[in-house]
Amino acid sequence: MSQHSRKKLTSGKKVTLAVGALAASGLAVGLLVTPSATAGETDAAEALKQSKDATADAAAAKAAAPRAKTLAASAADTTVVSGVTVNGGNSARVGTTNTQTITVKWTISGGTKLYGSNASIWRGTDRDSGLKQFLNSEQFNADTEPCVQSDDATYNCTATFKIDPQSYLTNEDAGAWKISLWAITDAATDVNTDNAKTWYLKRWSRLSNNAAPEPVAKGKTITITGKLERANWDTHKYAGYTQQTVRLQERSLTGSYATTSSHITGTGSLAGVEKQTRTATTDRCYRYKFEGTSTTPPVTATGDCVDVR
Image: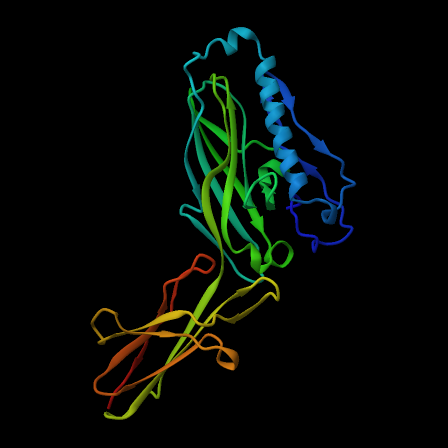
């Protein structure tokens, strides 16, 4: 993914940057950026510029289309974008090593002909003056169309973004991101929005759990130990998530888990660690649960059942 602001991408690596070709009445409308650009030189501002240029190309193709075709759309017609989703929900999770694919989907209606549409994902307070990250899609980079026509006036679109945490992310990238989306049809009004949807890019979490000893004599002490960790995109390792609320849940061998107490994870040498004790009375299962934050997804540990004898 070459349209990225991170300077820690492979230095000097040659990449080809391209925007999606926009077909209009047989016209191939596209913008090619010189392949001599290096990954380190390509930043969020350049990716944003390419997206804006592609939008302008689509608008120019619409303006240049034969008048009879453009007049087929009523002046009251409006391009409508709906059903915008990220990974079928509202967040994406990325670990420390594996490349993750983020999928954005949307539907276009209101016009009979599509001159172009694409989505980008970005982070910052303002797309022009407070931009931190801006990534164009795999389809955009490969010069391919993200939209497929489903009927005379509806297009279903899919854009994918491959995120390699070791190349593209630092911890500050966790949290709220937005979708920039444009769509130009032969309707009178087009769509060009900085925030078609707000979503969350989160640092993958994991939660261990162990209840011991097993088996245990009735009346003895059971110790339930867990550790909450999350991906660190600066070090590319997992680290304990400190001072976070985790809930200890219990159940009988045939019952359902219920929260019995809440606790705060440790700091320092016990970063992310939680340890509680219970008196062994009957066979019982224990687990920890974390509800998640704006930067870290929820996670529930695998339960551990103790045989009381």
